[in-house]
Length: 197
Ligand code: SF4
Image 1 (cartoon, rainbow, N blue to C red):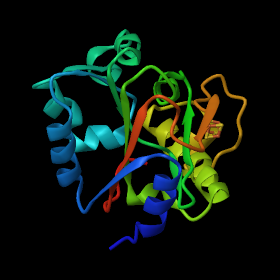
Image 2 (image 1 turned 45 degrees about the vertical axis):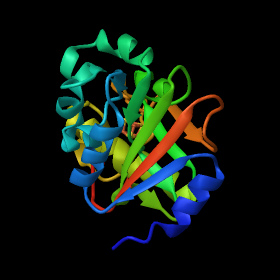
Image 3 (image 1 turned 120 degrees about the vertical axis):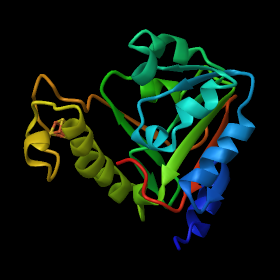
């Protein structure tokens, strides 16, 4: 069982609410109960996909997700009351790290919502900021490049980031949340299962 005690304390000290669940199914049930009768935007997230959150929430919310509703849903998602995504790396010291290509996912974590949820599996956790950043660049990004069939060296080899200059480079912006942003509720939902990349 993963010991989330340290990261939970550090996230709390940085202004994030934190919930911990043993399984993804329990986390999904919690979110399905907490988010009701509102508008929801979802950032590109294999974690969210694995939990089936779009299907669950769309039954009783207005959900905007470009993976399900097409590219124009990105704009609607930006204006939703609630935003849900994951992270590419979470430092045990409490920093949340995301790398993005189009920018909608990281933008959605910075401004414009009443509340942002980050659903984070245990595999995203790294002891330090530097190691969490390394993970985001060398594990999460290459796996996402492979998923998207990008013509990048990381997708071809699958072993690390090559800091490429490819036209198909998906790593174009890095957002680190040192603390919860002002004037928005931010909650990290930690799950003791591997989820996403
Ligand atoms: S910068 Fe290029 S090589 Fe590195 S992970 Fe991103 S797409 Fe892959």
